[in-house]
Image: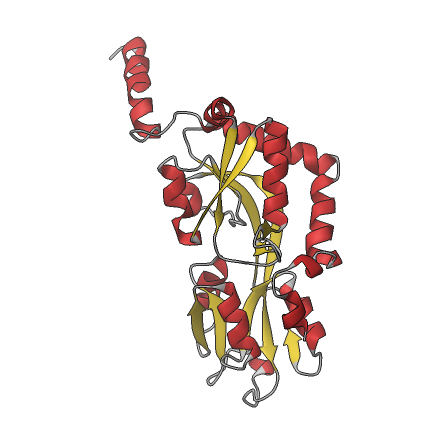
Length: 274
């Protein structure tokens, strides 16, 4: 087969490999034409990435990032909410243009979708309730019979914990709030939680709670696009580079992960503070 015929054959094959039937060929051009960027976010709350404010609206780091991305693109913003584990299917079906929802970058996930450059990072750390732990639990790294550890189902932290904890019982939770409540009411002895939760929990009662010094696993978060949308991916990467350089992303991270200035806006905060 000649080189020309090979190139022609590849050109004919490429559309069938990259674009699902009925899905727009390029998310960026589609969003600009529509005048709205459709951003997929998880319906679950994971403070401070995603949460409900006292008016019932959505707030959090991801909300501010997505709003800024749409503003730079010069279009309106529509959030499409769904359970976290449905986000990838919605993206591939063309129901959303991009996912901005704290998705950790992994090689396995990259087999299905394209990730932008990282725009945030998360450490997952084991936090334990020191009351009632079996003798010798700390010396074994809390991998000890009689210890129940909460993990978020389907997370990279769960996959890592499955390999690292052989004696402790791992208890998966669908919802971060349910895992937090189970830990605080003593249903589980420990929980693997993302930053900034370890510091918040220990500060609540340093005599009762302790956090491991070394994270169980560290991840980087990326925005997620379809493989058929290189223009969108290029735009997102450029946006991240620009807003890292001008300090916008750093300022957002300080506000949401360090300052606590947003706590009074959080739905139910006053009751939880009691």
